[in-house]
Length: 500
Image (cartoon, rainbow, N blue to C red; front, side, top):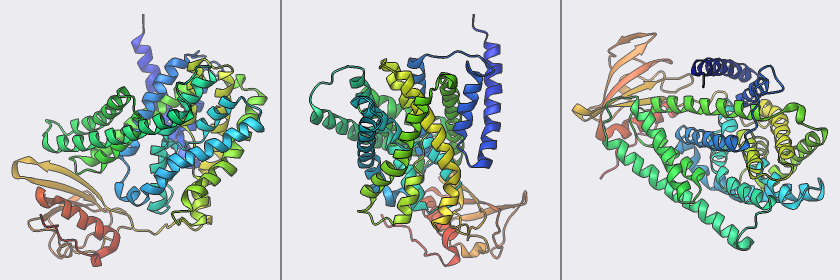
């Protein structure tokens, strides 16, 4: 019999401890995933918990499910305005960059580390992609230009799709399963699967926006749930169609996250919570699967050697090859090279050969584990320092305002809740200077927890919350105007509503 009470007790304790560990890790600039991984090891056979877990098939299935949720969270919280100018470089990094890095690591593994050819390919495919969870959790606390952040976030969200295809293929070949067709046919099928995932994800995202805009749900809490469920549905449909589900879920989530849907702030908060749960569950499980006492000196040396090569040779060369055509400065390329963080993706992908039963699969898993732990500890805490040394940070850059919208269905209007953060240039502007669209009214200002009806000459201050009622037809114009004021101040260019 399953003792549900004990499971809930242990699960709650692990969750609380993981959250406290995340708070501790943020103080040292470490991705929380490493602490979650350590918590899992502490609960495992080598730790005080003594929990035995060696089901590679279950770890593989749960790991991929967690990655779907993490990618959905990343897409739903990514601002299209930040990644739109850098979609081209990001796509090239996520495709050509992966190919270059895998080729270099394969050559290093085959000729230097003396690995079997397909095992060397597998190593390159597993350790080359950047990790969405690690990048999202670390970079959003580093004040770098939106262009660089958007490039890294888009790359980490898109490179999972081609990598999963390559790892699945290489693992099958390493296990002795012959592939149908030659290398050309295999490459063509991989490209078609990736393109299919992108197209289906875009279509599902568009459909989701149309449906959610027209359906009035009975509770505000259903909007975040429906949005996340729709992104996961995009993955399921695409995977069933034998296309890239990872590409589909990310693209669909980006479209949904940037559409003018109700309760966007609540949706972001909800999916961030789901993303945290997925990360905690994933890394605690992987920590249980890992056995530190099993890691040999050879595995540690191979992991460190491969990590040094991919960090200081393969990643910088792949970044240079991809970005030299986009006029990205060398110091920005240096930062992009160092910021290629790894985390969940390599360890989850390392369960694929375990599930396929390749020879020395546990050794391979241990190699990847050493690589992730050592180089995440090396790279993540040093990112803020490197950004400052390269002159890429701007501590005084103005911050954009946060706008939350809720529909007022009975009067065809929307209620905007605007938060004025520190360094926003909206501060100091009088209400009469906002020049919002016709029939748009600042109905209330909440300052120091005290609400009041503002006069036209009232100056907005840092920390204020503005409640603004606007007709649904001009809501986008009002939001654009508020964002412009937050970035450029009262002299911001006034964007008139486009004519139909």
